[in-house]
Image (cartoon, rainbow, N blue to C red; front, side, top):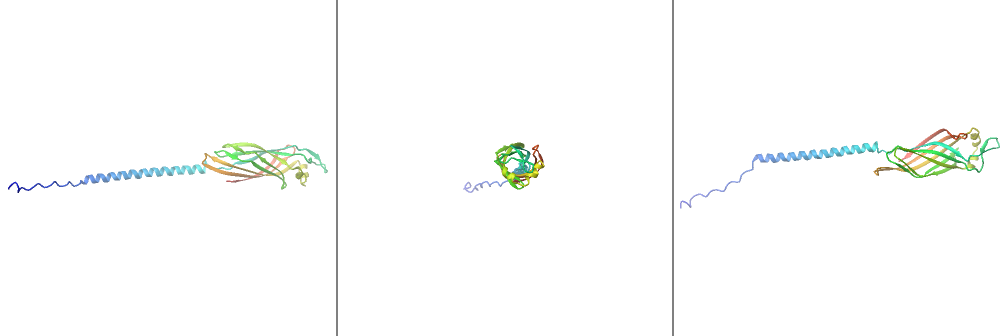
Length: 223
């Protein structure tokens, strides 16, 4: 009976978590959070730096610059002069006079400038006396390309102009031209810009030496 009356042992109580373990877990989470924030900050800073570099390159190195077109010289072929009624030499009627313009195309960009056929119209005292089409080509990066444009003169229109006798008497001929060149600048297949160059020139040619005595050009570029 005594054995039956003995008190049975109580079950062991569950151990409560230590406060030190909770603090360690909290500190570990804070360390991971700080590392994550630093990593995100580094990535964001790198993206901003790359964006700034790209913007600088676009507005400096990769900025599309205007092609520079210049008329270097002019020569006249098949010019036959006869003595007119006023004893002043004039071009022979029906002769095939041609004007050959030496034109340079300078490409200041870091990519090539590929242009299509060029068109040129020649004026004498606001009257069209000739036109021409030049072949297309490609101006390499930061290079200057030369080409010759042959303009066939309309002799009848030139002879019918009342200013011709005075100009031939002074051995100078003042002409004006309008040229249009369209093309495309391609930079690393990333930046592609269509460019159209329009140029108006007024120049005075010495008939004897066939040299340009004076030249003034105005250029307009459409991007």
